Amino acid sequence: MARPMLSLAAAVVIGVPITDAHSWVACTDYRGDVNYYEEDKCFGYPRLWANRGANALTATSDGYHIGADTGYNYMPGDPCQSDFDGSYGNYNDDYPRATYEAGKVYCLAWPMKNHGAATCTNAFIPDTSTRLFHSDADATADPTQAEFKANNVNNVLLEEDCDADDISSDECQLGLEKHDSGSMDCKGFQRSPRFCDNTDRALGTGCFQAPATAGDYIFQWYWEFNAGSPYSTCYDAIVVAAGAGNGAGGTAGTPDEADNAFGGSCTNNAIEQFDTDGTPTPPTPAPTEISDDKFSGDSFVFTDVPEVVSDIKSGDTFNVEFAYTAGSGRTFEIEVKSENYKTQYGFAEMDLTETDDAIRDSLEVYLTAEVPDGSTLKVIGMIVDKNDFEDIDDANAEDFCLAKLEEEVCFSEDNSMLGCLGDDDDDDSSSGSSSNDDMSSVYATAMTEGVAIGLVGAGVIFLGLWYGGKLKPVTDRSSSASSASPNQIGKGWEVAKKKDKQMI
Image (tube, rainbow, N blue to C red; front, side):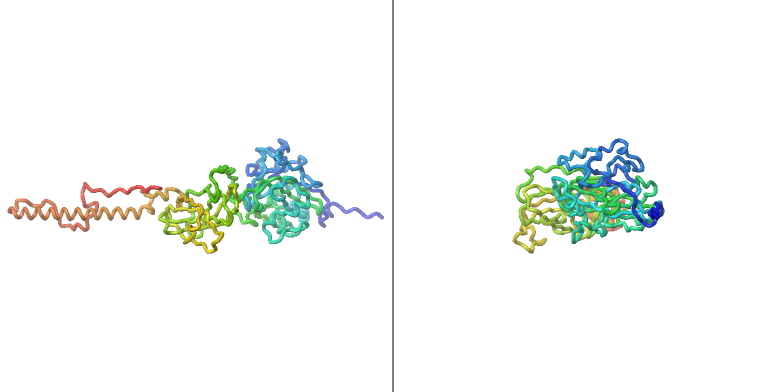
């Protein structure tokens, strides 16, 4: 007797994966809401995304256009869905390749295509593994699959690199958390809070930290629905040096805990696993070129020093950006000092790379003491030679200084230059000291004039008595000169006006 075939319902209940899957990466630098895809918050795309056609590229308010089927899904054979193009003709101005800043957090976005273990499906929808691999810096051809797997994007965060075949460890998964089979946990590929709104085209996301070394990279998103049956999407990205400027990545918004597809278990991956603040910013413009004539030997220029710093407490920080050339064993130091250079309020240092070509970099400066609100301080940068000196400190750093520049910065809690200009009639905090000085001057003047008037009056009385009392004083001089005030002195007196302070 023939054995009866397993029913579809039974297969689903006991967790036998019997359906094919498909999906793809739609955005390679997504900075929008985790609930619904926002096209205007995508700043990088996979290869040949522009070829998907108008129907699939026309943005919809719910973001479901990213899930339109155009044959973009790909199961490797070769690792990538299209070949590497060193001229990057796979991209255009509307659909560019991503730019990542070294060490910052970025997120990918994809359509769910009905593959979520959720309240509207069941707990046994598979999700074997979701990983992100990349080439070495400045690759000139697509890596082999083995070469891709040797460079898990999370290796930069780990003491030991992920094994090429590790599909079970959280730390080797995109987003640093793996879906637990048989649960509705909103992890891995299935991180999609609004999955049940549209199981086919709902948004899924996963985040990562960009590589630490600048260069041109090839990335491969590698998702296994059923074990051994992966889908991949390859894309190209530029990684720029830390501080070169690209804005903060990550995703925005918070999953609706009361009403999401996974019973409240969804999180914003960028916040939960990467400690972002949930407010990604648009990419900053590409940095302007710096001419070579600004540099020779050990030299630098400031490329971005804030005009105003609003965080003024001890332990607060602000960033300074610069470009430099340097010899071997050089250190870049920044000191924050009072205008008379006698008091130090902040410090930072970093080792420089030996280079004859200008390198852009940034340095986070720490305040070592609270800055008086409304102060204008000197931010002093120095390239210091530490080749033969191990004990350089604040006291003798300038003895070994090879290049030095300084800028003036306003430290104002209200984040306004007006806080440092001061002398505004409405600004009590900045005018108190000046006002007291001015009033002291008025009182001193009043006392001097009072004494003079008293002497003149005494002379007049004396002369009057001398001539038989023919002249008599016509005013009461009994009040003490020392108690004179501007209101008591007379119409010819005014409180001296305060002078405006000047920013140098």
